[in-house]
View 1 (cartoon, rainbow, N blue to C red):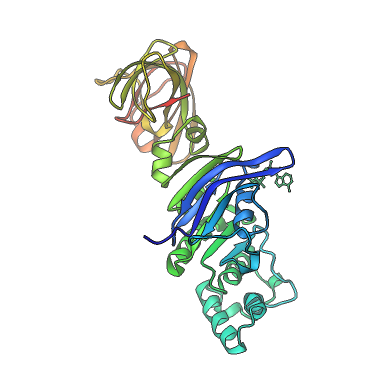
View 2 (cartoon, helix red, strand yellow):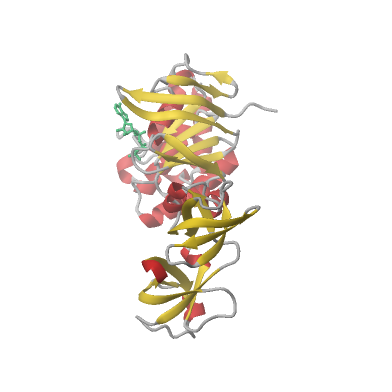
Length: 359
Ligand code: ATP
C-alpha cells in the first residue's frame, strides 16, 4: 500500500496558553480533494500552515508520503500554497508571475517557457500571458495564482479559502474549474473553507472541524446524511434538531419520544440505550406537509409561516410541546395543497430520514 499524501498523528498546536488544535489525527490519500471545513477560528488555517511548514507543531507528527517533515523547511516540502488574496506580483505580467517559482528553482529558460505555456493553457488564459494583474478580473487573477502554485509540480496543493474574494457567480464557476484542475493534474488538494456548499460540491472527503478538534471525516454524502453529532448536523446544511429521549432500541432503529409526547423512529449515529437523551435531526427537505391527515404516520401541527423561495417554499410549523419545525417543499408538489396560515397541518417524515444524535 502506498503511503498517504499527508498523515497527521496526534497533532497539537498551542499559542501560549491557548490550544488552537488538539489531538488531530487523520490521513489524506494521494490524488484526493480533501477539505478542512469549519467556522472561523476552528484551526483550519493553522493546520494548513503546519503542513506547509510555516508553523511548528506543539506535539504530534506530520508525515508527507511516509516521511516525517518536522525538520524540513517550507521550500523543501513537495507542497505549495494558494492564498485567499492571490498575492500576485503587480509589476510582473501573467507569464512572469507563473514562471517566478520556477526561476527560483533554477529551471532553464526553455523549460520555464514550456511549463508557463502549459499552465496558461490549463487555466484557460492563453491569450492573457502578457497582461498585467491589474488588467485582469478577480477570477482571472485567481486562476493565475493557481497556475503559479501548480507550475513547480507540487505533490500537494494547499488552498486557503481561495475563492472567498470572488463574487457568488464566479465562485460557483470556479468550483467546477478547481475540481476539474484537480482531476486533470492528479495533485492532492487540501482545501480550506468555512462554506459548506463549496465543501460539499468539490470534495472527495471533508474533515469537519470545531474548536480545534475534528468532529467528523467522510464523503460529502456521509457527512450530510449521517452527521456524527449535533454540531455537524447543524453546521452542514439546514436541519431540525429536536430534543428527544430513547424509548426502545432495535439494532440501528430507535424509537424516541419528543417533548410533546410524539414518537419518531430514527437511525442512531452510535449505540444508544432506553432512557438516553439526545437530538433527532431531520433535514427540512425530508418533511412533507399536508392539509389533511395522510394514510401513513404523521405529526399534527399548526402552520406558522411560509416563505416563497422560487423553486421551493419554506414552511414553519409548531408541533405539540411547542416544538418548531422547518419544512422545505418544492413548489411543483405543493401547488395543489391549500395550506392555511394558522391552520392545522400534518407533517410526514420520509423513510429513514430521521437521525438520533447521542448528546
Ligand atoms: P478563519 O476561517 O477565520 O481563517 P481558522 O479556522 O482558519 O479561521 P485559525 O486561523 O487556524 O482559524 O486560528 C485558530 C485559532 O488560533 C484562532 O482562535 C486564532 O485566534 C488562534 N491563532 C492563530 N494564529 C495565532 C497566533 N499566531 N497567535 C495566537 N493565536 C493564534
